[in-house]
Amino acid sequence: MTDITEAPDDRDEATPVAGTHDHIHLGWALTLITVAQLMVVLDSTIANIALPFIQKDLDISQANLQWVVTGYALAFGGLLLLGGRLGDLYGRRRIFIIGVTVFAIASGLGGFAQSELMLLGSRGLQGLGAALASPAALALITTNFPAGPQRNRAFSVYAAMSGAGAAVGLILGGWLTGLHPDLLGVSVDGWRLTFLINLPIGIAAAIAAPRLLAESESNRGGLDVPGALSGTFGLVAIVFGLSRAGQPSHGWGDTWTITSLVVGVLLLAAFVLIESRVAHPLLPFRILLNRTRATAFVTMMIVPAAMFAMFYFLSQFVQNDMGYSPLQTGVAFLPFSFGIVIAATITSKLMAVIDPRWIAGIGTAMAGFALLGFSRLDVDSSAAHILKSATNGDLHLGSGINYWTEIFPFIALMSLGMGATFVPMTLAAVHGVGKSDSGIGSGVLNTMQQVGGALGLAALSTVAVHFSTKSVQDIGASLQSAASGGAPSKAMQAAVNNLAYQGAFTDGAVKAFLAGAFLIWVGSLIVWIFLNVKHEELATEETEGLPVGV
Image 1: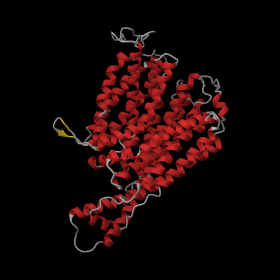
Image 2: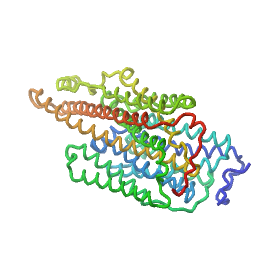
Image 3: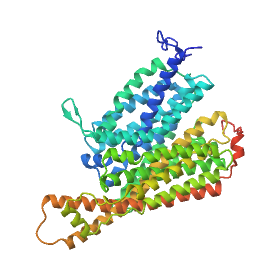
Image 4: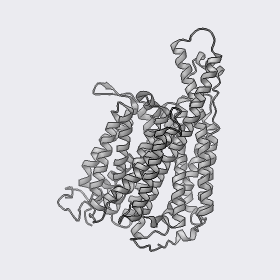
C-alpha cells in the first residue's frame, strides 16, 4: 500500500515518518482533520453560553450582542464557497493550513479583546479562517484516504464529529466560562478561554498538517473574488440595517438604517449580476433551477434561524432569569444533541419508504411548535413582584420555572424536528446534481444554513430588542409609581435594575420565539407545497447531466 503522506506533486515535502505504518498515518491524518473541523463547528455554539459575561465585561448593548454570533456565521457562510474554490485552485492542504492558522490567530485576538469592536472583528476573522479550513478539511479526506472502506469510515467519523460539535461547544463553553484561572500571574475571565482554547489547537494543526496530509493537485481556473465580496458585504449591510432598525434610538426611519439596507440590496443585486456573467461563478444558477433543490435551499435558509434563535435567547434566559451556572446551562442543552442524532438515525431509515415531503414537513412543523412552547415562558415582571424579590434578596425572576416541564419538552421537540428536517433536505439539495457539481451542491447548502441562520437571528433580535425596549419603559414607569419612601440604597437599586432587565429581556425573547415559530412554519408550508420528489427517486439517484458551462 502506498503511504498516504506521499504527495503526487511534492514528494520531498511529504516524506513518511520513520518507523510508522500506513494505518498509523491514516489514523493521525483523520485525527487532525476531525479535530480541526470540531474546532470550527463548536465555535458556532461555544460563545452562546458566555454571552451574558461578554456583554457585561465589554459593555455590549443587547442590540449589538447578536453580532458575536452573526458576525462569525456571516463571514463563515458568506466566504465558504470562495474557500472551497481556493482549495481547488491552490491546493487543499495549503488552504487548510492557512485557514486553521487564521482561525487560531483570530481566536487569540478574541480572547484578549478589550473592546466590543475588537471582539466582533476577531469573530469575523474567525469566520474567514473557518471558511478556508472547513471545505478543505472535508476534501482532504478524499485526497488522503483510498476509496472503499477506509474512506467510508473516515467520512463517518468526520460526520459524527461535525454533529457532536454543537454539544461539545455548549458543554465546553459552559465549563470554561465558569473558570477563572491565573495565566502568567494575571486572572483571566472564563469567557475568554472559550476563544483562547483554539489558539494552541489551531497552531498545532497547522504545524502537523505538512507531515500528516498529502497535498491535492492544483487546478487552473478563475477566482470569483468580486462575487464573494459583493455577496458577503451585501449580507453584512442587511444584517447591520436590521440591527439598527430594532434600536429605539435609530428605528426604521434612521438615515443609516435605510442606507445600510439599500446598499445591502444593491450589493446582492450586483452579486446576482456577477454570478450570471462570470466564467467560474461561486454560485452557479444551474444548481438552483431544479425545483427540488431550490426548495431544499430555501427551506435550509429559514429553518436554521429557529435553531440559532433557540440557542441565542434560551442560553441567556436560563442564566439571567433562572440563575443557572454556565456549566448547568451547557448540560441543559444536552438533550438537543441526543435528540437530533436519534431523529437523524431514524429518519435515514424512513427515507427508504416515505417521501421526504412528509418527513421534512412534519419535522418543520414540530420545530415550530417547539418555538411556540418557548414563547409561553413567563416571569412575573410586575413592579410589586420586582420590589418584593429585590427586598427578599431573590436575584432571578425565573427561579420558579421548572426545567423538566417548561423547557426540556420543547428542547427535545426542537431536536427531533431538526433531525427530521436536515436529513431529507440534505438529500434533496444534492438530488440530480452531476458529479462535476456535487461539491458545489453541498457547499451551497452549507452556505444557506450559515447565512440563513445569521439573517434569521438578526431579524428575530430586532423583534426582541423592540419589545424589550418597550417593556423597559413600562416596567420603569410601574416601578416609579410603586416606589415609596426615600431613595433606595445602591445595592437595592442595582437589584431592582437587574430584575427589571430580566423581565424586559424575557418579554422580548418570547416575542422573538413566537415570530420564529411563524417563520419556520413558512418553511414548512414551502416544503408541503413544493417538495414533490419521491423516495424512490432518491434511492435510485440519476444525475441530470447539466452542462458545466451553463
